[in-house]
Length: 175
Image 1: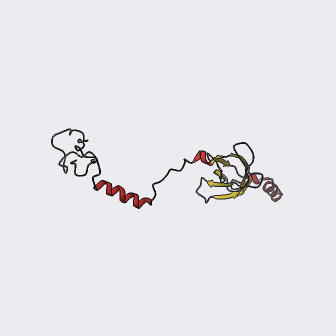
Image 2: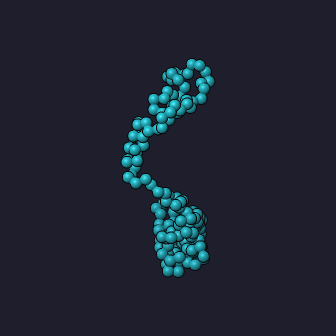
Image 3: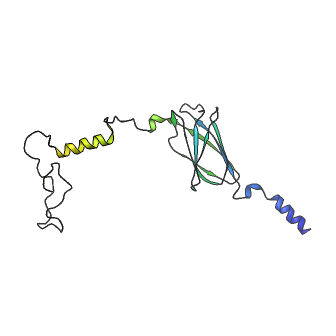
């Protein structure tokens, strides 16, 4: 009799009572006009530091990530022309299916416009800037005035012989 009661109690426990039962995240990615976005890549990032998972949306914009451990997840989505502005945060309960709507905006609205870069690459620009520092190409005239602040006391602290102020625009100008 006791065995039968224990057996009935074990069977009556619902699977959702298991705190480690995996859950699912299902959702739809949408363009700014509200229409579903096909072929969007949705990345699921676990707050626990588990590896990210990436899934591709179906033609109707739907996606599904299954068998996830309960916990907090951040979802981002992007296509060639669209991206999610903020990460959608999902708190997945044990055995539950979370539903997410992911509105995307145009990628150009997120990333700043590309700036024009001086041709020649970094080292060429660095060499030119260094050369400009060491070869005076300024118009003739008086040297610029001393830009430092007056010393708060007449005897600067060791090891300085003059008060440092962060550099001069003219090479050879005393600090």
